[in-house]
Image (cartoon, rainbow, N blue to C red):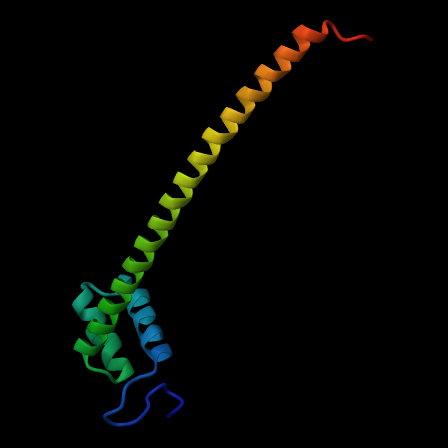
Length: 112
């Protein structure tokens, strides 16, 4: 494999190279009038076909969306768990308050 991340003719690119290429594309979008021009420019600079870079970007976007969905699901599960815990703690607090009032009434005022 060469220092440029290319494994050889007809071989696949390294994942690191693909990630860096997608990152360069994201950074260069602002300096071009269209995304197609940015994609063509970056692909040409890296020596890859524009469609290859477009596919890498689509895969990266899909992976980011999947991570986002997983994060949202994890947050929802944590919220449900915390709500159950709040219900249990409120119930325990109510029991302790009732018990405290009961014993205070039976024992009378506290001595100084």
